[in-house]
Picture 1: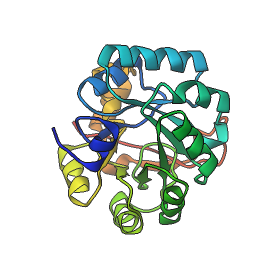
Picture 2 (picture 1 turned 60 degrees about the vertical axis):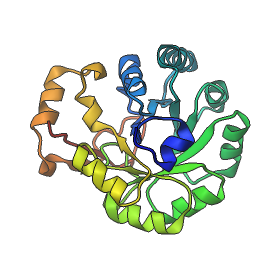
Picture 3 (picture 1 turned 45 degrees about the vertical axis):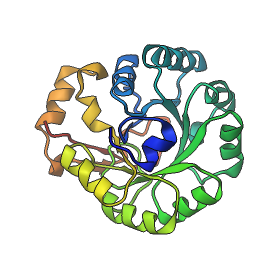
Length: 240
């Protein structure tokens, strides 16, 4: 067991947070939770009944902490109300930290996390009452809030806040995880690496492309913008 302020706060055994990707299946969330990480589900366009059912199944199979992520432009407050009492962590992304949302999470008995991409947002999240934050670098393989590298971002954020910080972006190896923890992160957020896991249930051709890709194959784009225009994101790689 590797103890950090993240593991003490969340009750996880290892300082790893599964990124709340749309491809996170019940099997993948369960596998991460069983191994001691913080499994996360995405509430983006997910029916409330599906989220509640999946959360309850993961908890019944593992007895482990779990979390759910809400994207602010698509936030459904009824869904938030329904799931907040069933999770350890409620996380928000792509919006300014909102004290009212944080208070609603605390009222439900969960921890509040904000996934953000600047020092200004980090300070605002702490002031809003967040229990922890995820600092996103531009390497992240998802929709982007961050505009600088994860390690420069991490250094700036750690100097600015007192709450635990999760390093988010481009972390897919033991070496990069160790580097992030040595730099002061309390945990790391891993997404693309888990896409290549057996439990992710994505097409084998896509997994093969990820494994064969190199860092220079990662691109910043707005190509996949249906339903969410002008939202930059990256298509990333993972090394076997």
